[in-house]
Structure formats: structure tokens, C-alpha cells
Image (tube, rainbow, N blue to C red; front, side, top):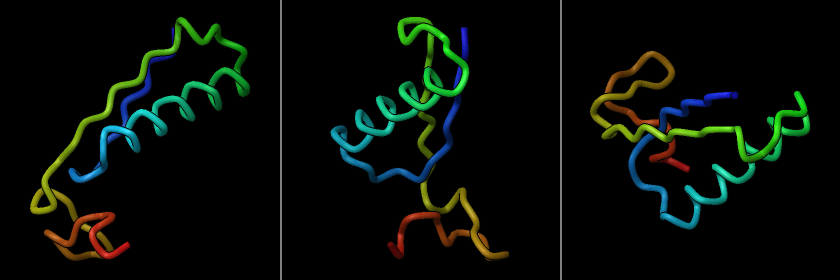
Amino acid sequence: MPYIQCDLEEGLSNDAKEALITKMIEVTHGAIGSAMAHINVVLREHPKSNLGEVGKAGRGLISSR
């Protein structure tokens, strides 16, 4: 049973999170053949202040995209 953890910046809509989880399950199923019902995905959201990018703290990961 694959268990996938994904850390990301807060701010994605519920629809975007659902799409991300669905895609992660599909890709994992395609890559290793695990039954889709046995693939677990957990999203862990963090505030921008807890993240860093390109060597700078508090910059976030998706804030400028």
C-alpha cells in the first residue's frame, strides 16, 4: 500500500487539491501497478512563513505563480 505525503503552501482550492490527489493516485498506479484503492495520499499544508525558496525564508513556493 503506497502512502504518499505531499507538503505544499496553503492556498490551493479544494478542487485543486482534489485534482492533485487524483493525479498522484493515477500516476502511482501507472508507475507501480498498485490498486488505486490501496494508494493513500496526504496533503500537508504550511503557511508561507514556514517555507523557503531559492535560499530565502518566508518566500513561499506558489505565492508568485
